Image 1: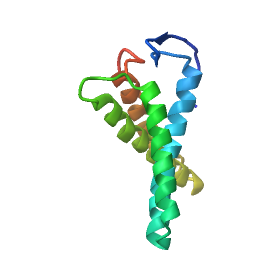
Image 2: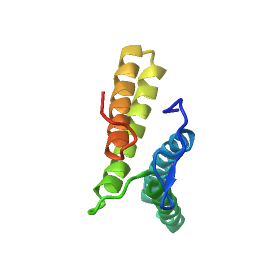
Image 3: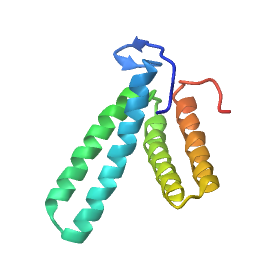
Length: 134
């Protein structure tokens, strides 16, 4: 989805420039879990069924676990928090691109995919997977 080369490295039990296929899958999973959290909240608003609150929290816990694996920790936890919001933004840009594509707006599709790509590069830069944002 996001990468096409592999480099594997694990330091101190944390993932650091690990197999990029794993990071690719983890990024996609975090995006989907973030969407699932929001979906569960919206379902609770409509139904008032507490089951949706519990499911939202389970998605949050799983997302947090995966995000812990792929973000480089800093003292204030800004990389982790930035990563959470950045991945949500990427997911929404991809969703907007899908909606534009569904009505045949190729330029709009590309516009939102380029924005998703920019924010993905920012995530990768902040977490030291790449040297610079292009």
